[in-house]
Amino acid sequence: MSVFPFEHPFLSGLTGDREIAALFSVEAEMAAMLAFEAGLAAAEGAEGVVPAGAAAEIESRIKTFRPDLEALNQATARDGVVVPELVRQLRAAVGEPHAKYVHFGATSQDVIDTGLALRLAGAFDIFGARLDALAVALDALAVRDGAVEVMAHTRMQAAIPVPASRKIESWRAPLLRHRAAMAGVREGVCVLHFGGAAGTRDKLGAAGAAVARRLAVGLDLTVPDTVRHAERDGIAGLAAWLSLVTGTLGKMGQDIALAAQSEIGEIRLASGGGSSAMPHKVNPVGAELLVALARFNATLLSGMHQALVHENERSGAAWTLEWLLLPQMAVACGAALRTALSLVETISFEGPSG
Image (cartoon, rainbow, N blue to C red; front, side):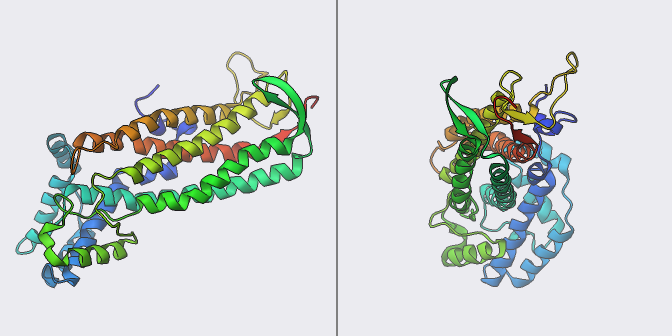
């Protein structure tokens, strides 16, 4: 057992997903936050909010900037957020007379939430590709084995014989709906967060909207109608979508594990987990993992809904709760999709007498 099994030296082989986890690494987070700061300087320089020379110097210094991670660690313990110390280090790197223009008109939440949006765009690309591949694999399974007769079960009791295609479609159809819904979920989270201290961009005056639009274009994000510092429905919607995907895959995993039982024998596993005590067993490890990840995300989803409750214009508590939960949910979803694809490609329906 581990505090964080998704990156554990050996548990991560079961539960982890390197591609999704990489998006939540310190390297990825730092790159995204620095992209915001460089983009902000460029946008403000172009709109005349800061001197063009200052904007160019900030962009140049950011390209070679290397943060002091230990100082960031210590400062975050004090400030509750990494940005104040990061900005201090950036200003020291830029130097006078331009240091004061670093992070001009922005606040910590702008940097962190926009950085998250940039990384989530990459996660959606991965999720979409895997959902597409899984749909193709399920189609192939239906073509090959769909006519095999299996027993339908209602309330865990034998009901009537049905073609295997009926079960396969019950796995595939919800995944197609989740794939179709993904565009709307992505639209809700891949947005620019730029509002300054209390969401009014007060330091930028009349140029605030123009800077926001230019910054969003540079980062390939959209500008919402209102600053979403305390409006967390988009993030909660993402969490719900992640839980729906893993829940659907969990249902598939549960069906496969039941059908692969020795006394049922309607599904054959081409490979599976070994036992230290019973070498004859082929354990349905992948199927079981899908069930576990589904239940894991369903449990964490309630916490993400708790994080909807921000006090007034910003909540440190609700915001921190998101940091604790969302990365795990994303990695769990990635691991479930990866596992499901591997599982579908290695099972076959054989019917009750297989």
